[in-house]
Image (cartoon, rainbow, N blue to C red; front, side, top):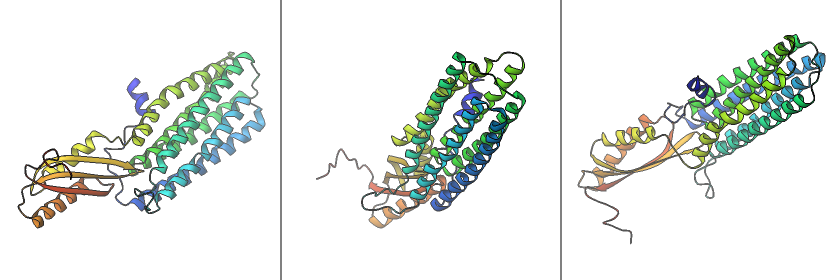
Length: 317
């Protein structure tokens, strides 16, 4: 059960997944995912708002406002994907891909704030119980909210993994958590129907706590990206590709970093070639092999050095 919940709310890292090769195509796919999910969430919000008008439920009204705010979180991520298309400048030499990670941190903040608000409302409902009218309509509203959020979550996480966007995956996890928040409305309505009116605030409080606990995995994922962490499997695959290139005797150094949903890096290799032309050819072949194993690689520089060369023995002048 623990493994199932972890995989559900903290998806596996996208670092070892094969991603779209072209940066522009990846950004277009991310923007398309945001557009579609934005309209799905807005449609879900409208349907819930109609039911709020018939039930007068404060809990459902809070969930509706929450879903509307969640739909708007797609805006900063949309802006981040657009910024990521801009070419590098003399000030931003690595481009603007990191805007995605900043958008991801904003989404994490919104999720945490939502959990706090949900917990506050649940405690207030425990202290000041309120009658719920037409609980069967609340069941329908909760199911609508869950279905809309889960559809958005599946789509965002799938596209985010495919293009290597941690921010889009985080937004998908956000939608999934919101879906279960909406589902709590259903469980609360069932409790009311069974004669236990406090079921709604109790379940709401448990959902708020679980959101904060499960959100930690997403915080670590985004934080690791901001600290230039990569999946060790990516480094291993890069080293394996370099070691099996023609003319490469040893791999001395491999460095990789994410810039948005694209990788960049460098490597220093020891070559068997005796002349400069052969060494350059070996480096080009090694770079080509790395690009074949890392589908979303942008700039990657292979620096050839003579056999037996070490930086310690040849310090810079």
